[in-house]
Length: 274
Image (cartoon, rainbow, N blue to C red):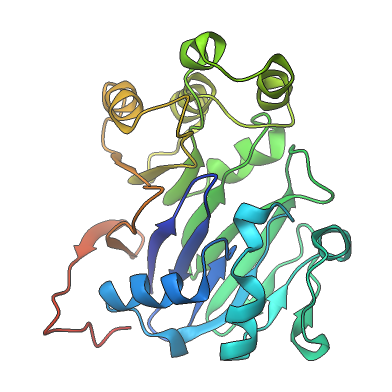
């Protein structure tokens, strides 16, 4: 069994991650418009009718701004906790609302989606692991700290989206007001490059072959900086940077040995897989 995944967008301007198998797929968050989601999936050869649900990590605008239109247009079930739904103030159609609980897997076809609570300044924030047979992909962004649960799940991943939000020196010397710097670094904000690297160096498994560094700050980080930092320690893990402006290539993880394949499409060819 294979999993296919891509970041459709990652950053404070919108977050949306696609994970699926040959038959069905889910989105983790819907922080870009429905139209942009359609455009980017089409460019990648991903079919909208493969989407079966959207899982919402928390209520911040950059994770839900496209949700209502997307769910309504494609009749997509939305998995969202009661507290997140309440604080989001979004109006979803009642029949499309589903609840999930931490550490209780949700089965959608051949996909198993498990959530766990994370440290972030939101009402009821969660991270997710999407599994198909023995293959696991983690979606770990908007993290105040690398808590024990994050470490536990990170150690089991064959691929992961991991937040590397800010460079400490850039943040400290930057123009953000003091209260915002404190919010970012107080253990309920975001993970720094150094914190993400520490998690990667100390807790990655031998099966982690792909790391997508995600949710980079526009003002307090650069793709070049974080890529150079992680490539020095990458070993057998391939490093890619998720963009805040465009989608990443679709990546396929296959079998117990975890084989990585980048999928490319052209305007004349769509992948029949999707």
